[in-house]
Amino acid sequence: MSSGIHDSFPLPQQPGGGPLSGDLAVQGTTDDAALSKLSAINAGYYEDPFLKHFCSRAARRSPLINRGYYARVAGMRKVIDLFLDAVPPGMTPQLVNLGAGLDTTFFYVNSRCGDRPFVFFEVDFPELVARKSMTILRKEACWSVLAPNKDDIPQVGGLIRTDKLRMVGADLRDLQKLEGEVRGADFSPTQPTLFFCECVLVYMKGEQSDQVLRWASSLVHAPSSICIYEQCNPDDAFGRVMVENLQSRGCALLGLKDYPSIASQRRRLRTAGWAFCRICDMNDVYDKMIDQSDVMRIQRLELFDEIEEWRLIQSHYFIAVAVTSPQASQAECTTVNGSGPSAEGEGYADPISSQGHETAAAGRESSRADETEPPEDTAEFLRPLLGVWTPQPNSVNPRLLRYEIPPGIPGVEPKLLQE
Image 1 (spheres, rainbow, N blue to C red):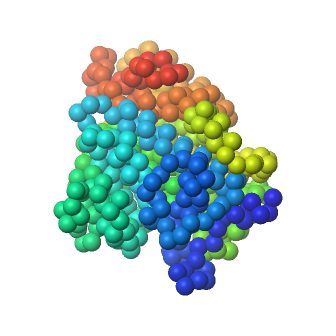
Image 2 (tube, rainbow, N blue to C red):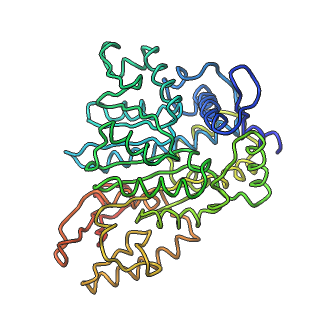
Image 3 (cartoon, rainbow, N blue to C red):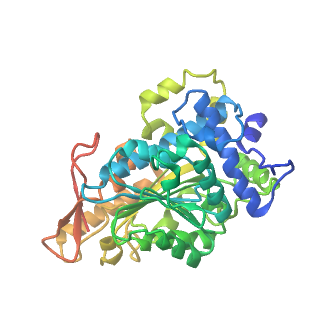
C-alpha cells in the first residue's frame, strides 16, 4: 500500500531540482496535477488534446493514480455540463476557476458550448496566470481557439482578456484585490455563475477560505453555484499519512484542521451563504454520479489489483455542489436549525403559506437524512444545481420565487421548490 500512498502525493520540485516550500510549493502542485492528468489522458481514460501543451514532459503514473484523476475530471465535468444545460436561453453562463493553475477546463467548455456565448475567468497567483497566458500565446493549437490571428488576442498587463477567456492575477487570500481584479475583467453580477476549484481552499487557513466562499456567494445577483473538489478525513490512519506527506513536502493542508469532515464542509457552505448543498466522497461520485458505461470502459484499460487502496484513497476526497440565489439569501425562511436557510432547497418555506411549512418540515427530514445517507443517483446529488434556474412567480408572496426543476432530466421528476 505504501507505494500507492506516496504516488498520491508527488513532490513539487523547483525547475533546477530540490523541494519547494510555502506559496511556491502550493503553486508547484499544479504542475504535478497536470502531469498526473496527462498520464490518465495518454492511457486513454479521457480526452484532452490541450493539456500536453502545458506540460514540459510526460510522466506515467500508476493505474491507481490514473483512475483517481479520471474520477476527479469526470466528476467535475459532470457538474459543469449540468450547469451549462441548466442556464436558460438568453443568459450567458459565467464560470470562475479559482486557483486555475494549468487546468484546461476552459478548452473543454469552449468545445462543449460551440457557438453558444459563455465567459470563463481563470484566477490564480499573478505569476501563474502570466505563465499560462504566455503558453497559450506560444501554442497555435491553443491561441487559435481564441482568434484566427494571434495578434488579435486582447491582453491586459500580459494576461489574455477575450470575450470568452479572461485571465485574472490575484491571491485568493487578498479579497479586496481579488474582487477588484475580477470586476476589472468585466465580471457580470447579473448572469448565472459557476465558481469551481480543485484542491485550492484546503491550502488556505479556514478563515481565509471562508471569506472566499462568502465573497463568491454574495458577488452574483443571479442564481449562482460553486463546485469544490478537495481532501477530507485527516484523522484516520490514511488521513494522517496524507497530511504528513504533504506537510513534509511544503504543502500544508491548512484548512483540514477547521473542516476535516464532509459534515463540517456542509456546515461551512451553509454559513457562507450557500443555500442548497450536496456533498459526496469520491467513492459515491465514481459509483453513482459519473457515466457508468464510461466507468466500465476505463476499468478495462489497465490491470488493476488495488481495489481496497483505491477505495481508501477515494474516501479521503469529495465533491461538493452548492447553489444560492438572491431570493434565497434575502427571504425569511424556516430552516434546519432556526438560524439560517436549509441546505437542501426543500427546506425553504414561504412564511405566509401553510403549504410552505409542510415543505419546510420535509426539508428538515431531507437534511437529516443527507447527513448520513449518500444520494441514490446523479440527479439527486445535483438536484440543487438542476432546480434553481427557472424562476416563476410566487402567487402567495410576490417577494419570493419558486424554482422549477427543468423537465427531461433523467431520474428527476419536475418539481417546484418553494421558498
